[in-house]
Structure formats: structure tokens, C-alpha cells
Amino acid sequence: MSKSNPILLPVDTPEYQVTPLVKRPKSLAGLKVGLLDNGKEFSDVVLDALARELVQKYGVGEIVFWRKGFPAKGAPFIEEMAASCDVAVSGVGHCGSSSPWSVIDAVRLEQAGTPAVALISASFCPLSKVVARSNGLGTLPIIRLSHPIGDPDPAKISGKGTDAASEVVRLLTGDADAAAKEFMSKQFPLPEHAVARL
Image 1: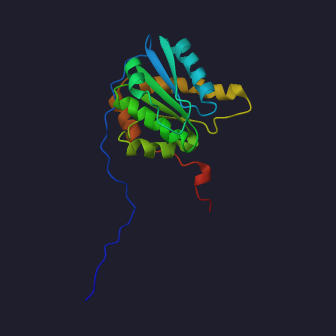
Image 2: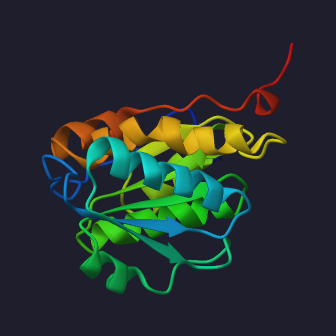
Image 3: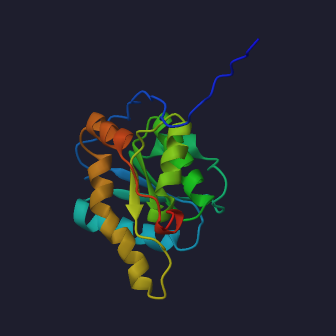
């Protein structure tokens, strides 16, 4: 008597429902922006530059820094931060532990009712996308920064924050449904060192 065993072929991706993002304001002018510094080296430099750009170019009313001190853990103050800020930015993820936790912090901010984005270096965006999806918010806007974040020239590090400002503003304002659809289907390229060379 012959027995049959099912063969599972992992060639497809599961279906995920598009999770709504929190409604975004039309503008950041006059609003309070929370910047969650994960404690990873150079994150403060990037976020300081972002803060300056948001105030000078986009009229943000107030910037409040929240620092968790250690990148490989969740922020213990998410509820308090969400209640006190109009919108939030989490980052900067640029390693295998700081990136997932920066994303989880941003997901939790969204779940607490505050529009949020995560700043992640290019090499860790694919991982961050998986983490956002597995934490119930595959639509989370992830802003891709060039990798590595560190550089011998401090101006190049701060430039990453300055350059990210327009994308931060775009994704924290306007149509939440459009942003959700964009990031539900967004595919980040794998880092070059992770792609097999033939």
C-alpha cells in the first residue's frame, strides 16, 4: 500500500491585509515632532540635523528628543511619547538589532495613535520591512538612508538627516491611505553583500 506525503514549496508569499495608518496632518507647521533616538552611534547627529531642517524649512513648532539609551530594546515611554507629540520619527536603525527595534518603536507609536516613520540605513531596510509586517503594520513608512551611516566627515553624517527631511514631511503629512498602499507593496532591494554573485 503506497502512502502519499504532501510536499510544501515555499515559493509564494502570504497575503497581508493593508493595515490603515493613523490619519496624518496636512502640514507640520506649528506642530510638535517627537524624535526617538535609539542610542545607536551617529543617530543623534542624523536626528539633530533633521530637527534643524524641520524647524527652519518646514516651520515645525517644537522638537522633542526622546532617548532610550540602548538600541537593542523597545522604548519604555511609547505611550507617554505618543500622547505628547503630534507626529514621531524613530531611528536611526543601522545594524541588525537597532533596525528592528526602531521599527517596532515606530509601529507602537502608530498603534498608540501617533503618525510615525522609521529611519533605516539601506542595508537593513529589507529586514525592517519584515519586522514591520510581523508586528502588524506592514504599511509602516520606512525611510531609506544611505549605508553606512558613519563617516569620517561629520558633515556627511548630518547630511543624511538634512536630506531625509523632505521624505519625513511627505510621509507624516497628507493621505494616510496612499502612504499605506505605497509601503504595503514597497520592495527594498537586498544589500549588495547579501546577493549571490555568479
